Length: 69
Image 1: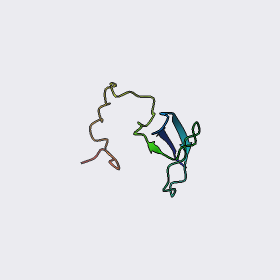
Image 2 (image 1 turned 60 degrees about the horizontal axis):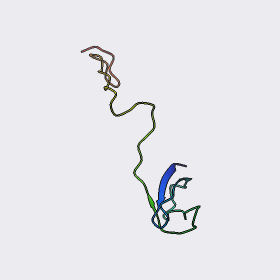
Image 3 (image 1 turned 90 degrees about the horizontal axis):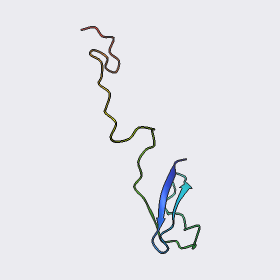
């Protein structure tokens, strides 16, 4: 089950919720109990930032590649 971030449209409270992937409704706000919440765009937390350089792929080292041509 994924964890999603939500923001309440009424009081502005931001919260996280563990949600079943088949759930179609957004959860109510835990602060004001309003059903008017919106899923927030969030980034995957991998420990790297967007400013970190992307590591170069070594030559001949692709997926399923043994390095031979």
